[in-house]
Image (tube, rainbow, N blue to C red; front, side):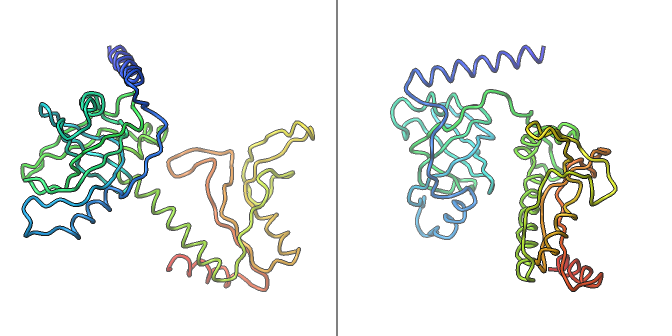
Length: 305
């Protein structure tokens, strides 16, 4: 029954997409120039707000993101739009939008649609910073449903809303949904990127040269692990996806390089768990005229930086 309902939803949304095109609205493929991210828009309002002005509004801003919540109120609606920086509330009223846009661009909005919104910022009676929409642009229409929204009442009586997407196996197999639904996962990706930036900065400052070495090797060397095997058709030759870059990095030192490092993928055809993946990123470095103390000092420096 759930599959049938999902199929009906998909069919209905595909029909809605066709109706948009017939109305001259292209639901995909637009470039959209934002003036602010959600977080930047909120900061912009807070830094310019004049408490002495009743119903203070800023100059128009342009934000864009995915619709994560929508509340219809007759000829008006509130929606929450999410981008990588966070969420911002949107207020949409029929009389404030161009003629003919309220139905297709607001009333028919589905959770998961990506939109661009233009309008001034203001603060609602409940104190939430909001974009008062004067123009809505459909950037990408969703076809499939997002995971279901759950509501939990906290001890202080407040209602916490979140999307139910916590099953570990599903999160790992559909990482794109995990990123969309779970802030902690997004923050992990961002922290990883920042960590790699810092490592590269420090390695460069210490005089190490970043290099790239071959991914396919004639021999499976550099570590005691079972390799993945592939075949080069033109050369009619079996090759091994590298299990470590060690041999090629050492050849660079033989060739006269004095300090090299590589941050790249390695492949080991072994067990799988949440802590052990057959392909993984590894930093490997070598330096001439050094010893084990050199390596220990380098590791300590990178970890404590």
